[in-house]
Amino acid sequence: MSEQEAVEKAKKVKFVILDIHGVLTDCVLYYADDGKKSEMFSLHDRLGSRALAEGGIGIAFLTSKITRTDEQVGSIYGVPPEKLWGTSAKIGKLDEFEKDTGLKDEDICYVGDEMIDLGVMRRVGFSVAPADASSQAKEDADHVTKRGGGKGVVRELAQFILEAQGKWDSVVSKLSKEG
Amino acid sequence: MLGEKDIEKAKEKARKVKLFAHDVHGVLTPNTFMVDVEGKRRYTFWHMDGFGDLSFNMNGVRPVFLDTSSIDDEGLYRARELKLDKNYYKVTNKWAKIEELKQEMGIGDENVGFIGAEITDLDAMNKAGFAVATADAVDEVKAVADYVTSAPGGKGPIREICEFVLRSMGKWDEWVEKVTKMGYK
Image (cartoon, rainbow over all chains, first blue to last red; front, side):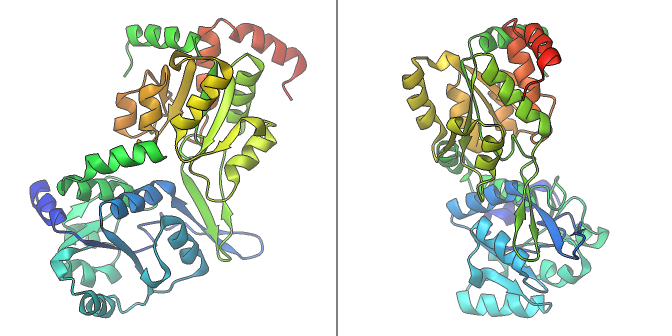
């Protein structure tokens, strides 16, 4: 897929659905001595989420199970609880969301990195994979980000979509003053 | 890349700095946060950036935390640890706070140093007399910077720029001698 084709697809995007592990994280799991697990996220993605919201584009997380960690990240990124979707039936969730909102496949961008994401990636209008996604995901994706999972994929994607839609400059001038 | 001429220009600007401001995330941290299964957050800072801010403070340059980015109170905790909480401000508009501090200190734009990394820093970068970008700052920020550190955010940019500024002022060697004899804490 050429860059221009990806830009054309990005122009239509009204909603972005994000896988969590491998997209918002680099897949690394940190275990403490008491067995408690932590994961590392990027604040670049908080800015990316904010930029998308400024540009009128909504966001949801879609992963097999929503944990307390994911709820915290959702609240930090400004994703409301009803947009934290935990199910391994990812295509069924997409159908339900489209039925509820009237959005069509071509209005939706999905970012995924693994085999479980391929079904949704093939359905949506604009499918994206991080630089370090599995080879299948990258082959299927309309666009591969330069950044790897957990390193600002949403930040980069937000700029890509908002530039395609001609909204980036106004979002930058707003955010540059507000910190 | 900065050429020799650019470096000379940067030194000239650095000499005038009386206040040096930075945000928390992206500069003092690599812009990351960890979350555990109970939702508790952790942040990573760089030990020697604290030395940078303290060195500014001991050498007539006021270090200022303009925190727009903390999730919890991590920026305040860091400032407190360095006993710089009087120079810590939680803000939404960085330059508005700098204007206040300029008034209070009786200084001008040319006396303001600022280091940034993201588009949210652009307004302050454009107005500060000496504007610095971290190694991993976004292109828009680097484009308007007088100087770019070789350290990325969270890996010592304040330590590095502090040395650059104090060297430009001719204060560094004496400071090193002092620290060597007395320590800095």
